[in-house]
Image (cartoon, helix red, strand yellow):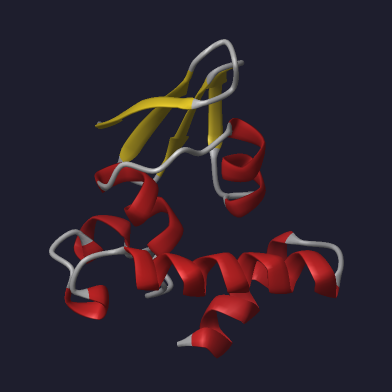
Length: 108
């Protein structure tokens, strides 16, 4: 699973440090979600390639402070910007406040 996460990250980051930062944050996110690999929300964050964005799962369904820069880094090349404070990733739309903090996420 980690190998697959790393291969996906390599497609979007230009260097090994950024690639490994994404992999590490994904792995840390697994530890932060209840029931880990058996979490009820996994199907909502499984991508076409079969990878799960544990990071997005965590910030979408469980209280966690996150800023827009970190969020965009973790979803580099995989998000659609709706406006300066709103992005779409997968099945969700994420809104950030004027301070760049995640305000809410809604299922589209």
